[in-house]
Amino acid sequence: MATPLRLLSKSEIAQGIHRFVLARADGGELPEFTAGAHVEVTAPNGLARKYSLCNDPAERHRYEIAVKREEGGAGGSKSVCDDVAEGGELIVSAPRNDFPLANNISNFLFIAGGIGVTPILSMARHLNALGTARYKLHYLTRAPETTAFREELKTPAFNGKVSIHHDGGDPDEALDLWPLLEKPMGRHLYCCGPRPLMEAVRDMSGHWSSAAVHFEDFGASKPAEKANDVAFNVTLAKSGRTIEVPASVPILDALRANGLAVSSSCESGTCGTCKTKLISGDVDHRDLVLAGHEKADNIMICVSRAARGDLVLDL
Ligand code: FES
Image (cartoon, rainbow, N blue to C red; front, side, top):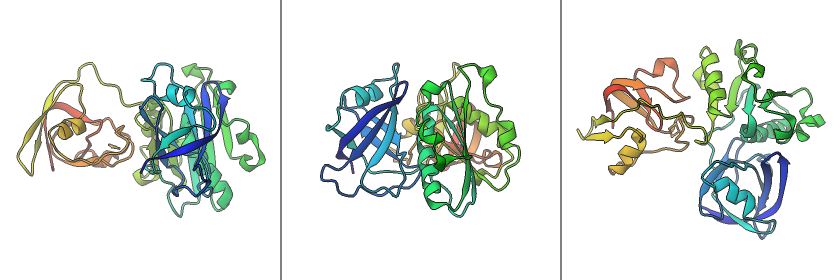
């Protein structure tokens, strides 16, 4: 349930990136969360945005988030950054975790791009506190001044566990990911960042167990609509209904518009919630969830579409 929380502090920790610390006005405990969780924050202008909690989940009296002020966005992040002062309030949902840290794993590989470091920072802080598992964080940003939490990541707690790479905005200077991904070595891989980074990591980790590879992006970088996207029909095998999916509408939204209750969370093809059995049809898979062997029989209906013709789903 969403509740108003007090903004204890707000500071710009990198160019255009603001750190917020939120707590209950009475100082009481907040709903528990686990590393990788996010909350939905309602900006003063009414727009809702999801932000990862980046503090250690052991902290029960505060939530820490980092917000990138998007100049070109719809205005949600600008309103969060500009329209609330320290001592003011933001409406914050209960935490939810679509990107949980796997249990009983002793070695993790984290790849974060830009503001995608936030859920991974919570994981790193949690693992630092536990001291029972190893990890290495590769944090990719444009330049030192756009690197959130840079000073903290240089402190002794992160010694030898973090490598920060700046590309200066030049694709030719991007980190070569293959040496990191070539040998899985029993590790679990967590990646959060811009869509092209996640797609590159997915493409280079096809030989990893699908259960060991995890992505998160909150829909901030949905796979782009393709210029040649066309309308198609989806037939629901259980009811026999046929629903038209317009060219610029995801299957998920078309089903909901026709009164179907369909589960979803990220709506960006990363969490796995909307996985649906495919009975027939040719799919253009645009998610980061399905392993190669799952693609013939499944579809993530929040992002994927018919490659040609129509689809029959087990709904
Ligand atoms: S809702 Fe998360 S993959 Fe579709």
